[in-house]
Image (tube, rainbow, N blue to C red; front, top):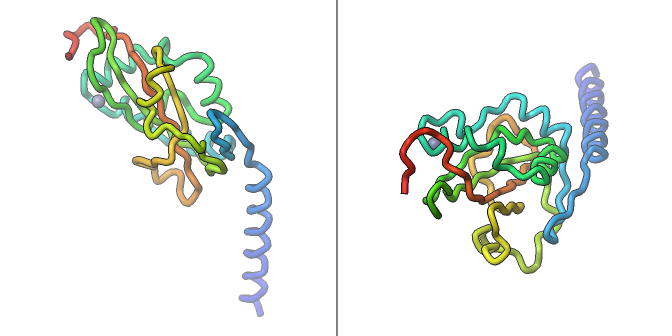
Length: 176
Ligand SMILES: [Zn+2]
């Protein structure tokens, strides 16, 4: 009897939590993507995350950390903020090559709690294919998911990726 009563309570709690969860999801639309997200839960998860480039000792990451503040466009930071993402905690970044003296091609990505509801019918396979529109910075959602932190637990996760030209600001010789 006691066991059954206990299970009943657990089930009720679960149901209530599920309802809260459903209510909390908001929707963002971008480039024909439709994505539901939970900024509240994402913010909570980010408190326990560290940043990939900050955990790295390589010169390309060190340069990125020095350049980052001026690098991310304000509009992009607003989107991250809306999603509950801390813009200083990339999962990981990648350095590709020097495009011209003082300017280097990097990409990086973030995760947040959410679900993809609609994928663009004509989607870019990779963000590189945005090249015609690409000036110094581009971002997009992705169906890929790389290196999801265990801090997200069982929550659904969506990946957001960017690519951009980062200035070489560190007082070290530029790689080519
Ligand atoms: Zn590195």
